[in-house]
Structure formats: structure tokens, C-alpha cells
Length: 271
Image 1 (cartoon, helix red, strand yellow):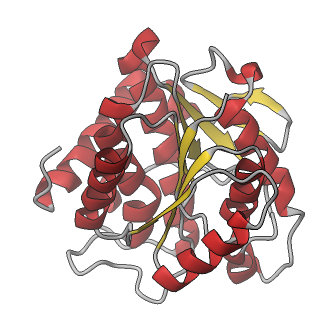
Image 2 (spheres, helix red, strand yellow):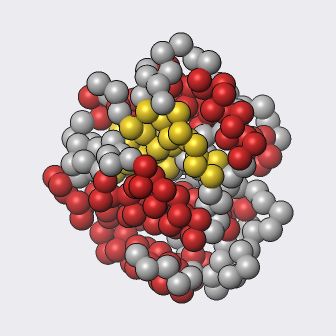
């Protein structure tokens, strides 16, 4: 059965590889990117794939929470049901690491934006739907003052903290939703894949992107991920595993989510 799937960061890297796999299975694929030009080019490539279904494009800059709200609104307006959301978009190095509102851009894009997008799309997601969140092996304890804009961080610090933060809110939201779903699953797609992010960060070519794309497709669709809400899959180990210990402490997860909600409120977004 084909599904309707929203994939953020779909125009390059793991996102594009994942999009190609999903398109080949005939799903209605909603691809997100920051550039109309890249979105149009990506859509054209996906439509060449044998068996491709409907490909929809949605442009949004995830460093702007207003854009995130608009993205969610556009998806809800055009599609009555969203079966799968894959929060893939992320940033490591950037020339301007602080937004005009004084927040760390890595936290906004990697943690806050996917949280807000998920919350706004939950009303059109069925109980058996899935939210797949891109985590990482590079998880570091979250400084809540840094998250809310009070302390500057290096790229390594911000990335590691933002990836633990998305894992923590995944666990928290999964616990809140329970059997009412959809499932919330955090995934480390594998370390040092050949993405633009890895090349910029470490100056290495990296490993085959299909390794990461394959696990995202499995997490989104395969029955092996039934009943796995609130869990973390480590594709380096090829199994479900424990994330950083902080994500296993409900009070810490709740405090992290409260900090995210504070950022959203400070930026004037009604959640």
C-alpha cells in the first residue's frame, strides 16, 4: 500500500537518496528544500524513476519558525492524511551560527523546527503513522541555556547537543502519545556518510549514502519497526540501542521540551 510521506532536506545527501528509494515504490512523496531551483531539479529527477508516484514540492527555511508553520499549513491544506514524516534536514557548519533573534541556528534547524513541524502535523497523522527523526552518534549533554539562546557554542558542541535534543524530545513525545500514535522513532543513520555536511565538517568523502537512506526507508515503512515508538536505532551497530543516558531520564526530557516550548513562545509562535 502506498503512503503519503513528507521528507525534509530532500534535495541532497541522505535526503535525496531516501527520496529516490521512496519514489521508486510509488509513494506520494512530499519533498522539502530551501531552494525552488533545487526542488524543481529534484522533482524532475524523481519523476524519471520507474514507478514514481506523485511528487509534491514545499519550500521552507527551517531556521525560520514562521516558515515551519507555513510548511505545516501547506501540507495540511493539500493533504488530508500524512502517513510518515521524516525529519531529515539538518545543519552542522554555517557562516552565521546565530539567528537574528539570538538563537543558535543548529538548535533551531536540528531540534526546534522538527519539533514544531511534528506538532503541527500530528492532527493529520494516523495512529499507525510514523515520525522518523534524524539523530546521530554524536550526542552530547544539552545545555538548556545554550538552547534558549544564552550561551555561544562551537559547531561540534551545537551539533552534538542538538542531536541529543531531538532524541530526547522523540522519547518524550512518544511517551505522551502512547498507543494513540503515531510512532516516534529516533535514528542514527550511520556515522561519516558521504553527505555535504560530513564533507564540510571533516573534510572526508564519507561512506555510501545508501546505508543511511536504506535505514530511513525501513524505519518509515517496514513492519520490523512496528511497536518501536520511543526507541533509538543505531545503524552503526545495526540494532536498537540506548542513546546518551540523558535521553533515558523522563524529567530531563520534560525539561528539554519545556525549553523548546520557551524558544517557540519567545519567537511569537503559538503552538
